[in-house]
Amino acid sequence: MALRNTYLQNRFIFIRGDDMIPILKGLGAREDDFEFVQQISDLTGPDPTLEYRSVTYGRYCIDPETRSIQRLETQPYTLTVQEDYKRHDSGIPRMFDETPTDMQGNTVVQALMLFKALVFQGVPVTPRDHLDYSSPAWICTMFNARTHTSKNHGIFGEPALEGVHSDGSDHTMTVFLGSKNMRADSAVTFMHDNEETTGVQVWETNPTLIRARVHHQHFLDTLVFVDHDFKHSVTSVHQMDAAQPASRDMLVVFTRRPKIEGHVSGYADTMELHSTEPFHLPMWLP
Image 1 (cartoon, one colour):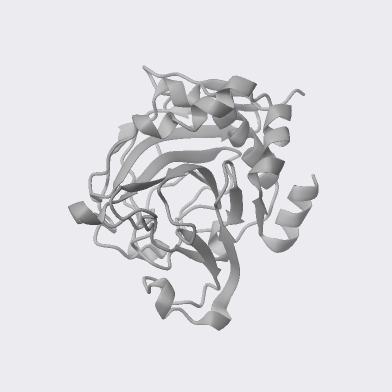
Image 2 (tube, rainbow, N blue to C red; image 1 turned 135 degrees about the vertical axis):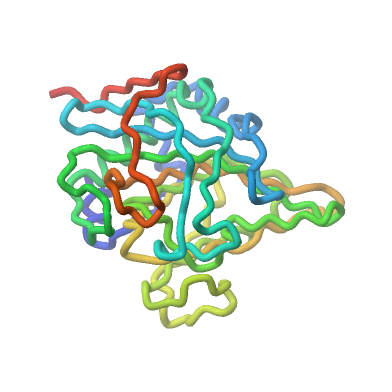
């Protein structure tokens, strides 16, 4: 509740991994799953538009009325320039490998979903166009993303190639799962005032418009922020040993109200449950 109060006041929170562990255990995470979740990114598949990233992706419905989180059927993922996302694949529907059962069955992942739901529930946000704020339900889009850098193969990992951007959501959570051969100054997150120009790179930004700087460095370091209150950017992934590839593993969870007809991405959300990989997680007792 103290973290929630900070979130209400500052519109973001950053929690060190050592502090997240007892929270997640209190929300049901089992000891053995902490080790396994650090290997979960081995299951990611090719990104359709970025050669340096592998991804899995799942859609979930957070429903406070039924006090449950359930998996929804897959659907293309699209972000647009109108949502402050300016990249070569803006507006292009993308399909990713689906979240594997081993991932959604991991109690650490489940506890992270519960943690986020408890933090943002009831927090007022600036409405985005063509999202259904009359609905009690939330759409939760969960990405497991591994970013690679290997100069020998001409691969340069950019956690945010799009530069300064927003993610078209109401609440965003990013969780560090691990890295290999990554230089210590890699992948720093900057949060910018919405007046910053969409699409500019970090070195082009106005320092007076930077609102916060956080650095995911340790297992389970977690950032949660109100997506429409800030734009954000992330610096590159660099190799520590230039002869060996580097990788960075993250869990990225976007949460927003359901899209309705007329949304800028060109489609409304399907609310049908997933037929082959069902998932049902109680949120809290009455």
